[in-house]
Image (spheres, rainbow, N blue to C red):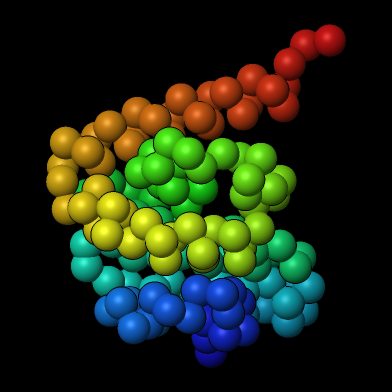
Length: 136
């Protein structure tokens, strides 16, 4: 079983905030790829390690999964993609999540705010796809 210390040690603080491991997957034959879901209320975190890169999503059953970088940017408009890096640095995201924990809890506790997050995330994803697949 993959644990948080293996996949994203900077996020160890989430255990003290009530998140617990729910599901994990480890594939040593596939470059050590791994996945871990930490479940809590009102939101959960999903960690995926793919060829050494770690991706983190935050979500709930009502809101679905969203990139953690989008959630952090939504709750704190001073957060930028440049600040997090490309791809986003897990340690930087962990630090910002710890600083904004109460805001993220508030976000996932409010159905109207999560609807706004869904629209925000959709807009961010569309902008990313536009940059990736722009015609020369």
